[in-house]
Image 1 (cartoon, rainbow, N blue to C red):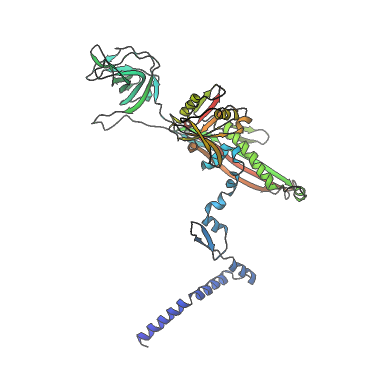
Image 2: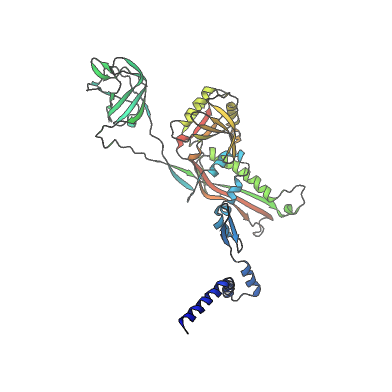
Length: 475
């Protein structure tokens, strides 16, 4: 046989495989199925062949499709991971979300899995920016002359917040022009030369007063004057600066086990009814009641461990965020004035480095007070906006935006005049046992002839950076 004849036969064989590759693949698949199904009867083999797993194919608009097979749980998780994993929680957030705004927010916020019922977490606050002059300063006291400014000793109510090279704004005390004899429109500014644990601060006035021919002195300053820490100032050859360290503060909360049980007797299920009231309807009502309870615990619960004398077990109770909030705003009048609302906005959005969009939930009297006032271009109300599955009224100001929401939980707890401002970016829900529904087989155990369902969740809510959240109380 010549080499040309051999090449021709190989080419013909390849062409034959190319024309019949579908048939060949089908035969191979059936042979593999027959091998794997050895020992099965014919019906089982047919079932196995029909139930072959499919292939996930991408659609034209990021969708997923199953071809050449059956949709299985594994394929569903592969094609749409969230479809099955979060089914229960997705159903929960649709059940009357307006009645439980805090619980609703917690299910959209950061959720972390807790490996224990006891949750330890760390929060970091901000370094104070203001202190007060601790005693009157008399002009010309404790002055050490210098080239451009004198060095002067002062003491404050909190010397520790200041470091060398800091600049300080002396609020309400006017500085002086270049000659040191004419007052300017600017406030007095100081430069911190050093800080001593016993003698206080050594400062140089930047725009100080000329006293007895000494440039850069301090005028008379009253006790209680605000000293506001500003930016640091370094010289050209400075490489290093006084150190700054922030240490997180450790806090603790307990996960509370929330439970709700729903039962329906078998006879009740079989009985004819005027309306279609089933166990599913009871389950929805139970979830709503359970969410109301969780809402109150997340708000006003007291963190504690109690020994149950009958069950001989430790009962863990979660602490609410009402006591975790780092700031408090008090008002006295029944109706908010325009000035009081501006002050509320200022307190909520300044001094904490939080986000510029926060949520205010409160009792009916507080919401009524905020709703009856007149708004202008400085603070104005917009139409209802929907976020996190809740409808809010939006209040906008130059400080930030508040999403206003009535919470009847405050009314039920006899706090209709109070409320709380929450920064959604800094709340965290720890979950030890995710929300789950478990069927109880009480008939087989011989307890009761009922269909029973138990709803369970073990969780707690914490505020990260407490100073970005604020209580509102009426005095």
